Every structure is written in C-alpha cells, then in structure tokens.
Length: 80
Image (cartoon, rainbow, N blue to C red; front, side, top):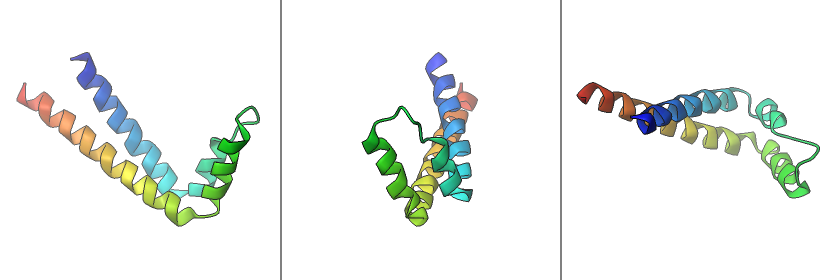
C-alpha cells in the first residue's frame, strides 16, 4: 500500500516537473545549476540549455510517463 502511494506521488511530481520544463526549459535548467556541482554536470546543463527543443522533447516524455504512472496507480486503487 505504501509503495502504491509513493508511485502515485512520483507520477504526480513527474507531471508537474515535466510541465514546467516543457513551458520554460532554459529557466528550469538554471534552477539545477549549483556552484558546488561537478564541472561536467554544469557543462551538461549548459549544453542542454543550448538546445531547448531537445529539453522540451525530454520534458514531454517525462510528462507522458508521469501521466501513465499516475493513471495506472489510480486505476489500481479503484480496483481494490
């Protein structure tokens, strides 16, 4: 039961994150840059910021997966 709730919460979080990233990919990636992070990590974020179309595609995939997970868990709850 706890695992189902966690999966539901994960699905909802993925939906929210995917939607925000889909709307404003560059601003969203800036949130994940940290001074203390490894240089390779920040370089990856810089490279992703240069191609917002790719970021939007990844965000759409995350949103779709989050919606599937959320509706899958909700349907399992209705069955029980």
